[in-house]
Image (tube, rainbow over all chains, first blue to last red; front, side, top):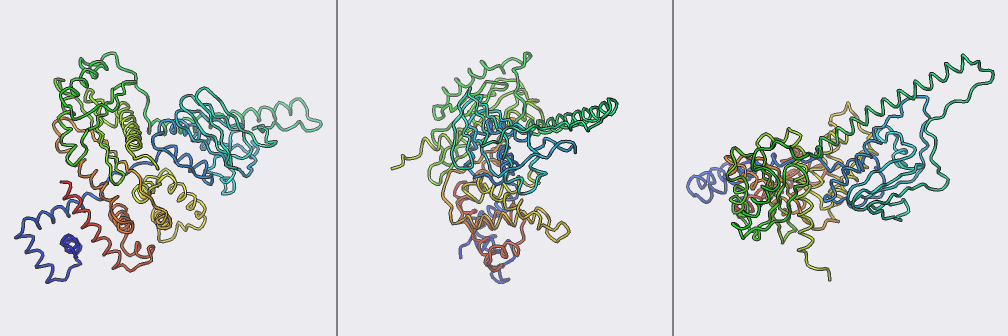
Length: 374
Length: 154
């Protein structure tokens, strides 16, 4: 049994009294043992504080909408596209069909899965009952009997059918699925006029129909807004560059800072700089990612904010490790301090942009550095 | 249910499984199928019940495990004055996250379930089908190994 194991047993009270006492004496006498004892405490203290992350929003949408669909790898690097695709899925998941006048959707067996690598909008006709409220069998056929339209705005998407076949849809293209005789069904059927109905009775019946439709529409708009709100909370709202930024924070200023940092620190390289919206996010990669890389990168991070009065500096670190090779990335954002808070719209958006960018870059870098498959 | 408990289940999947996206969907598929059998008046909370399903499922997947890259992404927002402290803590947490990935499967499950998800040793032992002493032993070895790895990276 190793010393560290003994220390762990001591910490848990699992060591016999005599052995525990002897070990306590060693901790008191031997600095190396004392150091290990402190390190063990740090480990045990830090473990419960490892960050908890929400699953990718598109993955939750898959769970809600495609619970029994054939599973396909979901790439974290497609988070943005996935998230936007999920907007549509969440919309469907929450779309109400509560009004009793509305016919229940017919659920047929059959699943369909859409993998988005980019940005796509997905719509269904007719809209489906909320899978969350549906029975298990309804979940199994969550997409049966509907026409699903996938419009790819950027990148590409694979549309998988239950038989394993797939269709690739690229940017600018639209693909609509409809199986067999599954013509889009009317979502709402106005009951036929009963024989002998008087004009007054017809007015009452039609007014009731209009009221039911209005109610369904209002509920749909409300739940759609809720779903949109959930998405916005996750991905934030794209931020325009403010016109009244203090001097030194504009995109061109940041580019000049990056140039200066790269010149002063030849041991790092620029992996990506995203100024497509406010604020710029800069991702650096150290050429040497061995132990202590964070410490070595610190001056570069600090230099990004040098000379600015009371700057807000956001730093994110990413380590990708495949068991042998490890790749380190440092994300830096400089903005006025009020915009670095995660509770603000800018802060939430910046956090999402940074983590998405770093995850994508990390995975890409790992793939590039992987040895070729024989 | 998915929104409330998703992060916990996702945490288990990404730390204990090389294909966390697949495992996450499979676990929910099982949980949704088994939901009618969950007794809200029973002794186990919904979180406990879901964690048990996830734990069992991840054991089943264990044999199909393969190595892949692990991404540790930590968004820290320090001001320049607090950068030292924030970097220290961020670095420690990042190393710990990576070190966990280097533990043997069974040891990692013990650490994640006990320390991160607060599962009692007895419950872990029951699901794993081993004695409590075995779980304790795995936990001590895991903590010892984590300490070694952390000391090595200091």
